[in-house]
Image (tube, rainbow, N blue to C red):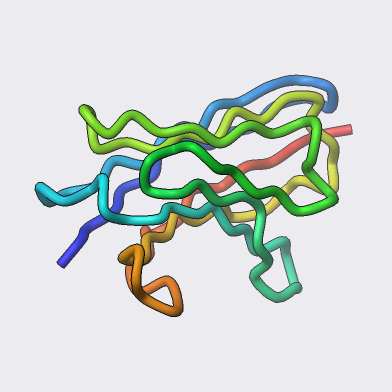
Length: 119
C-alpha cells in the first residue's frame, strides 16, 4: 500500500513558477513509477508527466514539454513537478500517482492540489 500527499499548489500569475511535491509512504518507493496528472475545470483528467523508478527516464505531455520538469528523490520518498512559464490553461487540480514498476496502470493516487494561473 502506498499513500501519496501532494503539496505546493496555489495561485500564481501567468509566466510564473510553482513546484509541486508528492510525498509517498512505504519503504519501496524506488520500485514505483511516479506520475503527475491534472484535471482542468469541467474536463477529464489528463496525463502531465511521468518518471521511471530509477529516475533515468521521463515523459511529458506535449502541452507541458519544455516548461515542466519531473524529478524524484528516492531517499526522501518524494517526487516533484517544477512548473515554469505557467499559462492560464495550466489551471487544474494536480494529482500525483504511483504504479509498481511491473503493474499495467497507476494504482495509487493522492488527494490533489489546486493550481490556479491568473492572466
